[in-house]
Length: 254
Image 1: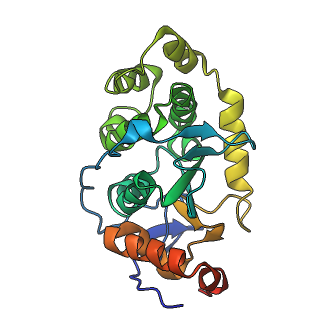
Image 2: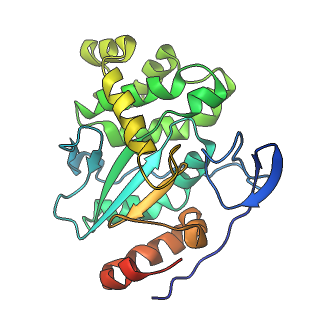
């Protein structure tokens, strides 16, 4: 199986030393690339209100899209991870496009480890708010707003309750007494904890795979082609290749 790929270099601090690797958040105290420019604006889901959203039976996975879609993409994200914001503005656009046309079902596992590294509880509060948005089928719209606003939010102190509610006002039909109460009271705190645990149990590393991490049909996108996730065209090509030859994808060696 041949997959086009590019390798991205990110400068990270590992055990007190500088190293060069293609990584996201969760592989050291810092995962921001020294060569990153400002992320382009996100393109919201087209036809977003027609996409089914649900909580999977495992109680931690949020699913978006046609349950019968041919390809399943699982995304691991921490709302405060800047590399997640870049991914959502680049390669994830291809995943969203495939989800809209029902070729892909997207699954989200939401982590909150960045709170330990950055301080505060913004990741936990954001994950709780995203879960509350799912109750009224506004997860995808709210998720888009949060990622688009990440840089400005972090510059002003992170995802506080007030900021999460103000951002929710940008999503038609989301704000209500019920939603506001769920955000303010951390109603889904158990979900936040369980989701972080599910993230940590993914892969061989006990701290989790880093974010963003992506599996396609339950196979992790490896370091060799990780850079594809930050190029919309390459991500689209990868999804097409997997769909055309799913057996080869499962046998593909990094």
